Length: 228
Image 1 (cartoon, helix red, strand yellow):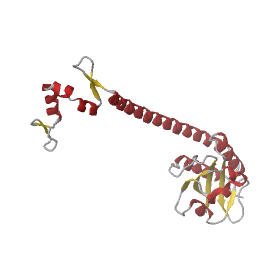
Image 2 (image 1 turned 60 degrees about the horizontal axis):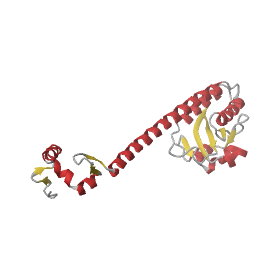
Image 3 (image 1 turned 90 degrees about the vertical axis):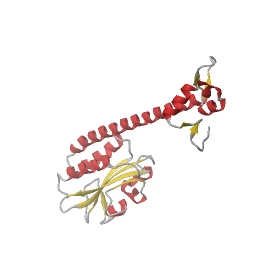
């Protein structure tokens, strides 16, 4: 074999040519023990059969294991997404049953714990005077400060500037999911915040679609009643 010429005894290294060469010269592969070893093959006891050796079988097994693991991960992700969507839809029904602003905040906090296993949920609002009972009062510009930018709509992960939202439960919160809200006319800037006791509960690379959906539900529900 001349590697520089890309040929085997004058035959071009094309798949069809290699196939013909091996068919015409079956002893070539069977008698080249070094090549067989590199390919992970071995000659069977009968002498005329080339079978997979341990190395080749190990590679096939490893590839199968990788495929099975990837398939399992996809299935687990799909189940988790389906469960999260189902819990979110149930949470929407709970929120729509609220009869006033205070009950809306209570229901949100309660379902965050019972449905999602979180530490807390908070509705916060920028207002010069007061907010409904159970809501968190913010000063003007505080939503931008917590989210990190005036143009930012959501923030996932741990944000030290948001710990004050969770009051006495702040020491339990290790990660947050927060979405900007705009309520009433003229609009008041607000924030829907969920806190998790798990540092990996909310991470920066997570999507905020479901949390944003709940924020829109809270906005529309809160607008049923005027702010007092």
